[in-house]
Length: 348
Image: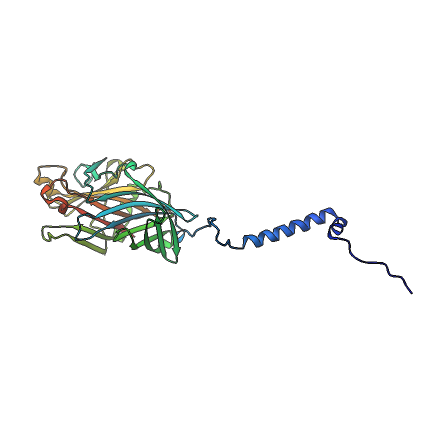
């Protein structure tokens, strides 16, 4: 009878010591990598860690005009802002705000339209738009669900919702206003990854085909023919000016419609020094109104329209979004009924 020698295995620690040390290191490293991969693919339950968010159709920066306009009200308001979205699901915003409740005067931009089809005048804008210090800021979070963008501001105090459409072969996203809980009724917006200081020159703006830009607007107003407050609106057609001239020095644009004393002079310039921002302003007034006051440059209730340039990922100009904040200054008996206030876009 043959005798049998025990073949029981040594404990794990003993077996491990019997292996070459380099092989042990490789085995342990492989085990750690596998465990790490499993853990990283397990979603946290009830955790508070921030995760990467989907940018609104891949775009970071949006220019937005939004307003609360009711025909029956004389407390209408408009807001023109810059929204910047971040990959952690947060959004920051800087805006300029005008309201019929807060009467502000027109102010001057510092730019004079020389050698343009218009009269040689210093261009005006809505009070406060010329200064960054006049702006306000908001912080919030956002969610993207298909084509729907929802933003919640100030720790859930209020929200707004937009529908997104990709345009310009993916280089631009347009926003269509849907709803909010803070009294907004209308709005326009466009977004891209262009930096805030990616400003288009006046020469390039004048060279653009403005007949391709849609002029859509919602404007609270009264007129001689319709003295009851109402919301004037339009969609689909180009703006009244499609041919702009660059004034001397390239600092502004000018155009005249209809000609003669019955015409209207239109001006566009930066809100102030054109460095580091995309803020423009449009100023317009009827020549007959200035002549009726024995003025060369009109100082009455002109139309002042703060705007922001729409620029796509490639630096191409697509127009403006803007607000009209033409508050009555010179006809006191009309009060707020002499205001024109609204939101608009001139954009493709």
